[in-house]
Length: 591
Image 1 (cartoon, one colour):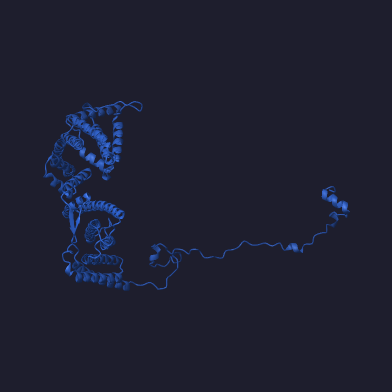
Image 2 (spheres, one colour):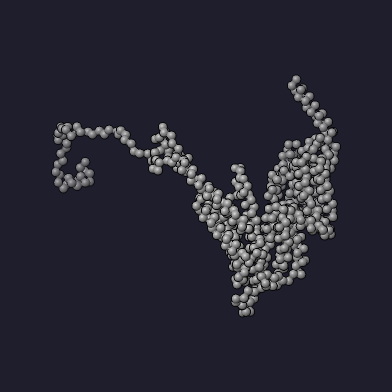
């Protein structure tokens, strides 16, 4: 009876499955599945090889679970999933994982192709393979058993991979059509479903948009370059697309570099003959404008790092040119002592730009940390501390010290005064945060002395800054610092008085330190903070010596008073044998 009931239950479940399949119940959250898998298995750090390994392992598990094996260990027998086999959504997942595995391998090869150009051919083959798998998935989803949402997602996924293939082949028009189709489908899906899914669809649209703009630019739309620059400012187009954007911007600057021949700085005109320096100086204003327009701190930090990297490369190129120029002068024997050449002055200018950018970047980071420092702190996560700001201002002061030693500016008194004044401003801020760190550990007198030092620096800046209004407009406001220091001084004095009162009111312990261990005073209660410290006084250690009973010693005293009987008659008397007996005893003849 039990077996019959089980068979009936199986038959009924099969009938229900058939009814559900007929109604189109098979569904697959394609975008959600691939996004979660990518984030959890390597793509958060750009590790495509790890994600590819995960796809292979998941494919093996799916095939084993569904009994869809490709032959045995001795022979491979290829099989294809057909529409008739779609009794489970995991069959669709198999095709999706095959496409993802091929795509991740292509992206891995794309990273390696930067140093090994031959791998680009393999890259294109794997991308085509991924697009082919996605087309198979789209055809399977055309079955009436699959719901409408999965069909649309499959179409968008196929369009995305097809667009990637055309993009790598530089078929800009076909790539743009595929990406536009993908974007349209995801926008429609985002407007039709819940907010949680809509966020995923919008993220995919944001990823595709830079590719569309890049294709439009290469087709001939000159307005697209402005959109690409705007996307760069907002942080869009990450990863591979970011590299293409940087290459595009460099290409545009290279065309303009031919018109630039010289630069003027600190009243001296310097010819610029190095192409790398021309390109950098042309893009300097654009980079500074981009930093000023950055929408968030993360984007601003990325732009600062990009600018600093370009500046370092340019300085290296100028330094190599300087070495070549010095070698030529030594060969001609025409070395000029005491005069700074144009190339050296250009090197000083580029170093000045690098150091000023470092100061601005660290100052921006300091402002961000100051804002977080004023926010209420929670116990869950440790927030910034004054020590973090001290480190930033140390780096700023180090950069300013390097500025004052630039070659060709030793006799520029105006420049030296500006640098010394900036140094005073940042010293005041550094001193202020050192005082804040002392306040946290309740060292009131040290903090008060440091606050006085801040006021001294601030007043010195105010007295010297009368003739430098234009050059110091980017510096922090010293007047705000003075007001903040005065407020902190009053708070500090009040906190010190309260701390002193608390120490007076609390009943003090005897001045003589009690060294009695805890084991000897268990019957008396006393607050002893040392018991929870690193060296609690619990027992005597090492323990004192204590008297214990010894094992008795026995002495045989009766032996001294015992008289033994004579044994002379029993002892053999040795005779005098003379010389013959002596030799016999030696050689053993007498025994």
